[in-house]
Every structure is written in C-alpha cells, then in structure tokens.
Length: 285
Ligand SMILES: Cc1cc2nc3c(=O)[nH]c(=O)nc-3n(C[C@H](O)[C@H](O)[C@H](O)COP(=O)(O)O)c2cc1C
Image: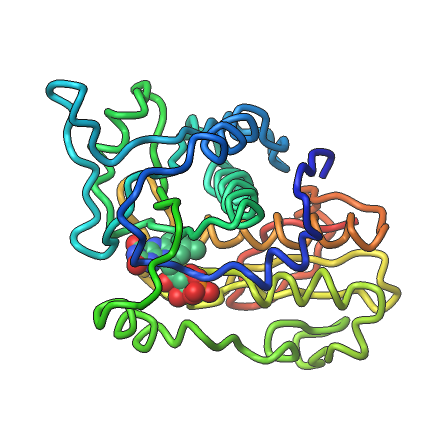
C-alpha cells in the first residue's frame, strides 16, 4: 500500500474508529474539509484495480435550489457532511471499494472526525445523483463525517446493542494455520499478529465479521476467505460482505506496512487451499 498520509499510526486509527451516529449539528470546519478533500482526490490504488472515486457531499445545501436531502432513514442525526464514492463495474469492484473507502474513513478518523459506514440505511439514489454517477457506476456506501455529539441517542445505543458492535470474535475463531481445524492464536501468528489483529478489529456490515484467514505454516502466504451469512447483504449491484473483505485487506495492508512487512494482496485462487463453506478472496504474499 503505497499511499499513507495519516499523521498517526494506522494501527492507532483502527483502534480509535467506531461508528458515530449522532453528530454536532454544524458543518465541517473549512480547514478540515480542505484536508479531507485533498486526501480524497488521491486515494491508494485498490488491490484489483477497479475505478473507485470518492466525494465529500453536503447533506443539504439550502443555497443550491432543487438539491435533495441526503437521507439515512433516521439512523444518522446532526451530520451535515457525507463521504461517499462510486465504483465502475468490475469483477472485484466490491472488495476494491471497501478497501478505498475504509482508507477514507481512517483519513477522517485521523482528522478527529466521526464516521459510520452506511451500506443499507442511506438513500443510495440521492447520494448517486449528488455525486453525479455514470450509468456504469454504483454507490456501494456512504458515511456521515463530522464531530461526534457528546451523547449517544437511544436509537444509536440500541443499534450498537443489537449488532453487538462493541465486541469482536476471538482471534483463534478467525484464523487457522495450515488446516481448517487448526486454530491459530495471537501468539502463534508471529509477525502477522498485528495485521491480523487489525482485520479482527475492522468494521463489518451488521458486525457479522465474515473474514477468515488461513496462514501457511511457514508464514510465506496468508489467504483471506469469506464465510457468508446466506442471503445477507446482497442488494442490487452491491454485496456488503465483499465490501467487508476489502475493508479487511485495507487494514491488513496498512498495518503490515507499518510493521515493515513485505507483501501485497493478489489473486492466487489457483494455488490457494480449498476450504469447504468458504469463498476464496485473496492472498497476501
Ligand atoms: C459494509 C458496511 C455496511 C454497513 N451498513 C450500515 C448501515 O446501513 N447502517 C448502520 O447504521 N450501520 C452500518 N454499518 C456499521 C456496522 O453496523 C458497524 O461497523 C459494526 O456494528 C461495528 O461497530 P463499530 O463500527 O462501532 O466498530 C455498516 C458497516 C459496514 C462495514
């Protein structure tokens, strides 16, 4: 991952980020908006090369006649500004979008701003029109961006409770070593411990945490798999659990770079191990 413009370590930002659904009712301070925009025009290249572009939108600009409100079905309150993005059609567009958009989320986190991935509860059409999407593009997600309010609303606390958002599965439930029935603990992961921990801490749609990692015993390669919740997260043109995979690849790559580990995500489907009930996504090597 070549581009890293964060002031703080990525591993620190990954730990600091959480979904903020209640915001102070004020627009982004101009200096922060400028720094965000400067980053959004030059995001890192995603692993599979899909054309991803990002934008910063205002929820409602009263000075522009006829501009529609960017709605979130009441899930987000107080936010005046939104990050969103579009990706052109390609086989791996969802992973690539997840990768780039999570980088933007961490950029906002670095600027002290709250965010919340929205893949379902946002008016996709209105965001697309405001961004100016082409017919071959989809808008997989958006996120409010702004200063978190001092208190969480009841709805926000309820959403966190039902998604169990404060918890993650244990490391050894997500990682195996050499075989499906050989769980790998933090201690056994060796140099890959921090990048794998960064995956474990990642946000995922409804906090389903569908990422599974297969480490080769000699640590030469690490394979990422998707264990799908059947029927979940499939919307027209959008696959939320493939977006989760891109977020995982972003976290892993940033923290591997921070640790000085060589490697990159690549498609090695031909030589990756088969894992029943799991979809192969990519290999770090
Ligand atoms: C791809 C994706 C889509 C999401 N969609 C929504 C959404 O539509 N509405 C919402 O309130 N939260 C959404 N979330 C936020 C998750 O519920 C949240 O990340 C998860 O519960 C973990 O909580 P945390 O982000 O505070 O760590 C989404 C997250 C991801 C990664």
